[in-house]
Length: 297
Image (cartoon, rainbow, N blue to C red; front, side, top):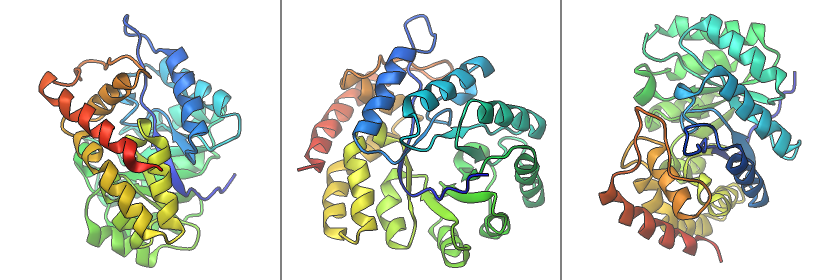
C-alpha cells in the first residue's frame, strides 16, 4: 500500500455533462489539465461535487480512469467510492483501485445512520478488502450522522486510514482531532470558508469546491498558510470570500458549475434532481468571480 500523506489544496472535481446528459469527457480532460497547470495538489473525482449519486457505475469508473490517465502521476487521484452499503462500497472501491486511483475518498455511510461502532466496522471492512489508503469524509449535512472525534481518532490509529476531510463545521470536534491525531494523519477542511482558520489550528489543507473555478488562488491561500504567510492568505481569503459564500446558495455543485460555465470551461448542466442555478443568483456568481480575480498578483 502507498501511504501518501495528503496535504495542500485538492479539487473536488465537478462532472461536466453534454446536452444529451452524457458525461462530457472532452471538457473533463481540459478541466483536469487546467487544474494541474494551475498548481493544484491533488484531484478528487466522483465525490459529492462530482454528482456521484447520479452516476452509473460505468460512468463513475470512466471518470476515474480519465482522471488517472490525464493526471499521469503528476498529482494523486483520490477517488470517491463511498456507499451506505458496505458490500457495494467494497465492490466499487476495488473497481476504482483497478483504474489506478492512488487513494479512496470514503464518506461515512449516509441515510441509514449507523451507530459509531458501525461506522468503524464499515471503514475497516473496506480497508481489509482494498489495498489503497483511505481518506475518511465526515459530512453530517449530507449523511445525517456525525463521525465523532473519538471515532475518527480510533480509525486514525489504523495506518490504512491516512486522513479525514472534515466538513462537520464543529470547530471543537476538529480541534480534538488535531490535538490527538497520530503522526502522518492528515486533517483537511471540507469547507472552503474555514480553511484558513483550520490551518491556523494545524490542519493540512482543504478538499475544495471553489478551486474548480479558482484553482490558482485557492492553492496559493493554502500554501501561504502552510508557509506561515498569514497576511497573504488573508488577502486571498478576502478576495475569495464572496465566491465561497455564493458556492452554497443552492446545493453543491449547482453554483460552482454555473461559475465554471461563466468562465467558458463547461456547460451549465446538472442531473436531476439537481437543477441549474436560479436566475436571481447569477449576478452574484459573476460578481464573486470578478472579485476573486483579485486574489492573485
